[in-house]
Length: 49
Image 1 (tube, helix red, strand yellow):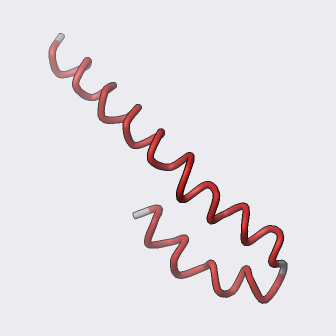
Image 2 (image 1 turned 30 degrees about the horizontal axis):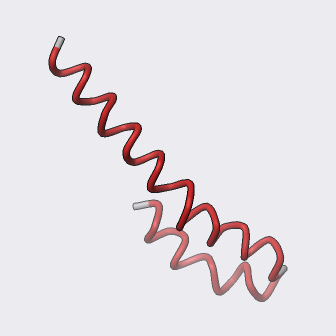
């Protein structure tokens, strides 16, 4: 879902401010996978209790 929203809004952000748009792409490629893994592990822990 997050990736899809970034894909939709990124061209708009590029037109407004390319520096800020590059930050959203960094979040998509570097931070979002870490958050997905954290949520996945958290769910595994919660369901095993």
